[in-house]
Length: 272
Image (cartoon, rainbow, N blue to C red; front, side, top):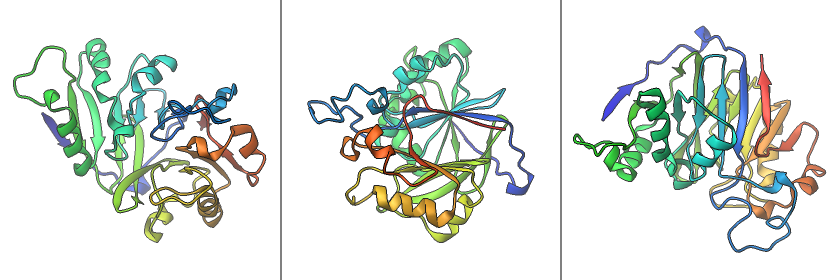
């Protein structure tokens, strides 16, 4: 196992290249449609109601990274026609965010390089536990080649892309959100401490999880997510990690305050 600690960079020294953000998936752990469900959302013909597990791709002119590699990772890479991937940055260790990591084997084969993986120590422990064969000293041919980089609360670099971690709470579990210049991405949260909220201020776009309309033990509800956006005065927000219980995309969009939208698979945002 190759394991390195990322070097922190002072926030003030960071310069942000133009970025393209692609939403690879915007669904909750079961995805939408959910298996065996005949509700109006799961049977909707609208492409915006077809949601793979939550993930985004962040690209500069020279670097491509993905945040989380859930069970749909392989198809997400095929659908987005990704030919080269520099790194995967993980929010936390739940299966809907890490289960597809084995499929980095294809990138290993074509690049002849190990995949850089940036994760907290807690998440790394889960990755090693879930994919032990990738870390054996004597490996079977063709297993994933993974290079672990430990991240915590300090900013770090992936290629030419500066990344600022933001610690949020998924009930009692610490989860990392990430700020990429003017764009902040947070999923699987139901509480953000005041000092971490400060890191979000000044963002032009905030992506936040909003599981459903009803309250939930470990996720923001729709009204709670709207409250966070309004408290931070972020001019534009997109909600992700959506369940079928939220309702159809077209219906919910009509109810949202100005500047707030539901994200959807394939949505792209540009930042200069």
